[in-house]
Structures are given as C-alpha cells and as structure tokens.
Length: 363
View 1 (tube, rainbow, N blue to C red):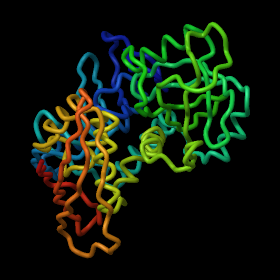
View 2: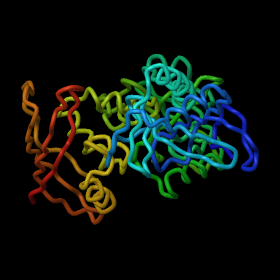
View 3: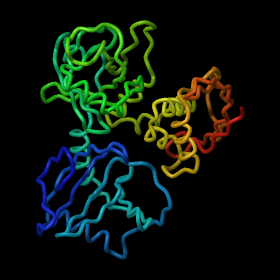
View 4: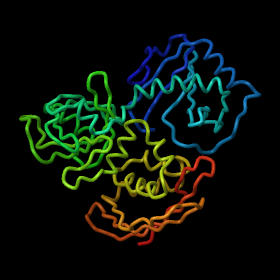
C-alpha cells in the first residue's frame, strides 16, 4: 500500500504496473508521509533508461545530506528507492552511487516534488495573518508533522500567540500520545488545518494557565506559535518555536543554509533541548557524522542546556571558525554543570553554508 496522505492511487502488491512514486517524509523516523503516483510510461522509461545507461554520469559517495524526498521506481512487484538530493539528482543509498540527472529530467521531477511538498507541509503565515484565519473560539484540527496524529482544539485566548485547548477528552488523549504519554514543554512542528488551508505551527505539550472547556481531561491550555509570534510575559520571539515553524513549512533546510555561525550554534542548542535529531543532523556536513550519535545520547541523558556566552558582534569573513561558548547543562536529576563548548565551523565557498565539523567540550 502507498504511504499516508497519498495524492495518487493505492496499488496492491501484486498489481502489474509500471509507475513512479514521489514520496515526501519530513524526517527519516517520521510515520507521516505524502506521496504521488505518476503513471507516465514516458517518464518511467526516461528514468529507467538513465539509471541503466552506462554513459550516465555517476559518482561514488559515502555520505550525503539529509533529504525529505524519495523517488520509488515500481515495476510490477519490484520496487527500487532513490533519495532525491538538493540538486535533484538521485542517490542509491545501498550502492552508494549518485546519478547525475539531465536538466530536462530534473525539471520534471522537481515539478512533482513541489506538488507533494505543498500537500505535506503547511503555509508559513505570520501571527497577524494566522489569527485572522483562526479567530477566538474557532475550532480547528492540529496535525503532528512527525506522527501524522491529529486532534481537534478550540482557540480560547492569546494576543501574542494562540492559547488553545483540546476539544474533548479523546483529543487530549491523542495529544498526550503524541508526547509519548507525558506532558512536556518541548516544541513540536504541527499543521493547523482550517478548511482546506494548512498552516505551519509549533506547539508545546504542557497544560498551564486558564481553563475553559470542561470534561476534556486537560487542566489549562497549551500554546501554538506562528511566524513572529511572541511569548505573553516576556514578549520575546521563541527561537525554538520558530525553528519548528520552519520545519512544519518544509523550509528548515533552506533556512539553515543561509544561517550565520551564531544561528547554527543556537540551532545546535535548540536541537538538543527539543530532542530533535533531524535538526541536529542538518547542522553537520552529512547525516552520518561521527558526533551525531554522541549528541543523540546527550539528548537522552540531559534535561536542558542554556547558552551563557554572548556572541561577538563581528562579520565572519574566514572559511574556518572556532567559537567557544559557555553553557549550563542541567541533567535529568536537576544537577547543573558549567560546560565550555568549542564549535569548529566551516563555510562552503560555493554555497556559503556554515556547517559544524567538530564540537569539543570542557567541564
């Protein structure tokens, strides 16, 4: 069967059919996918010929950047899956081969990828725009981008962002399931479904503050943020929420490609605090970087990390940087440790993208 949210037709495993399936999956571990079945004999033949042609330019690769798009070549009962990279080339991960596609084929594939991405992700709206579409006391559906689970809520209040409550006890149960059975302040990328319109949002999972809907097994409300929305008390833009917004809009990779070294370091701490492996992987040169597993373990053993150092106000003209940052690390047992991180960053001279090549820690 095709994955969730299919834009094409479901195909039974024994059906004799040649087709190409474009699939979007926001992260490698996500259960939520969107797909499009393309039953074009011409396109199938063109892709198949390119992959088999000895004259096709191929490159042996060991690693590659993280991608949300795959192309599945289905011929009767056989399927072959390729990663579509940022340059719209195809990668056979098992063989470690990158196929360089001709420009006309890239244009065709890009058209279909954009169709599925538009379906899978939400529109990035400012808070001023979002609150017009989601007026006070309106009821709408929240879809968790990672799991695909959805529940209904009502906006009850909120002038700087939306304060909402699950509509029923069943909705509260689904929301708690999204947070693995435990309420949490962690931010999650969500889609806000209002009619046929899907808006990128970021929610936390902690009941707090005023209540208003009886018998929904949720004591208080929770927050949903949109682009540029702020906290009520401090009136600050919450960078963790904004990061999840870009993820919900399918624009995180584009955002981080233009990020400054300081933004990259802030994103590193956000990834650790939000336990988000996807964000972490995008900050390194490739998704299999040696240190990713180390910091994945740190996500699980530590409760919170907070940057203490201020950033230097300067332009970074060099291609290599070493930036020391002092931070306080809180363990799950509420013990605080002062840690000095040294971030070794490199700028790609062609794309102007900063990546973390190494991180060291001194206690």
